[in-house]
Image (cartoon, rainbow, N blue to C red; front, side, top):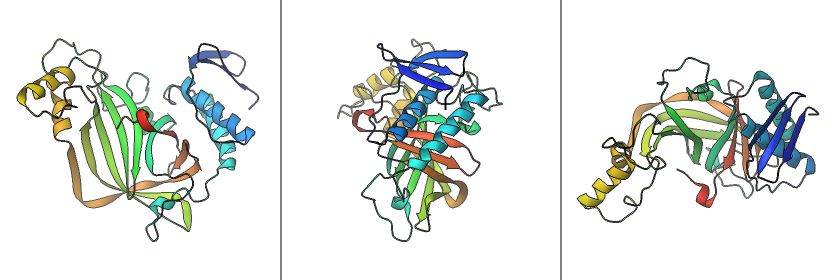
Length: 285
């Protein structure tokens, strides 16, 4: 890792040097690490820095992806959790006393093309999405026995705010797409999680001042539409849950590292995903 240099400046920016030539200044990802091993702590700091510098991996070069993979494989040697999938055991499910997979997580890095291709502005891969689609945050909700992959879609910049029914508050005019899976694990393979696809959810991602009111009158409803838009308002009132008659295999993933703040997994296709745990006011779904 001698070719990776990371330093935090006084303005809260990080200077990231890759090799001898490329230098970038990026927003530092705040950490709240409980890891005490100095080597593990340094590896986590490097991982957070690379995640920020490559914009969640979406703009990562091949060399940068290899560097992140190298950091992760070094860090996984310090994994403090022996049974990270314990809360998803089908035979004897239990909530471990240490770090748990359960909770809400936000993606900070991935090299999976099915995820990095979601942003038409950065992806070079073919996509079924319109070029004007605006990707927001990506996360995962782990609530045994389910795991929901959450994608936030923001209102495209090209839509004028003065148009009717589109909303004036862009930060609240978001829609959440949730792919719902049933997950399972076992003590014989405590790091492996098996997934079955069970359905799709659509919900409103933002909360307006009008919709947070307990009032259900028509004036409040119209004010919410004006603020966040028609579709987010309707989904806030009536979230959609689509469930199939049968479940379908949806792959597996292996938990490479899990502590109280950080989770790293490897998919069955050998792609990596790094997530940080949401806490308190950080929750967005």
